[in-house]
Length: 97
Image (cartoon, rainbow, N blue to C red; front, side, top):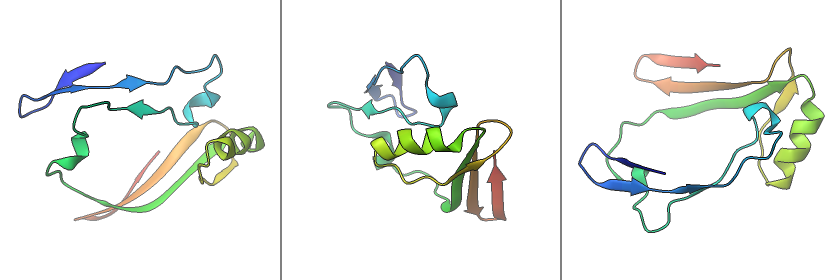
């Protein structure tokens, strides 16, 4: 994959292929930036992470897959798969789901 950055630089990367069951979007995929400079090395606005967790109807299945990747993400039971993210910004806490 590729795209142009705002400064005109060309970014290229490769993604791991997703299995037939991507665990409802809660298990991360991997990105190989190759020789491209990672896009976060530039000056970007930043927010601090307040919280990051997930919900899933079968949390044990998701925890098992995350553990295989050594990902430490709290997963609690919930009616549907979703990620919950809390960010501290200039105007206070912002919750995304």
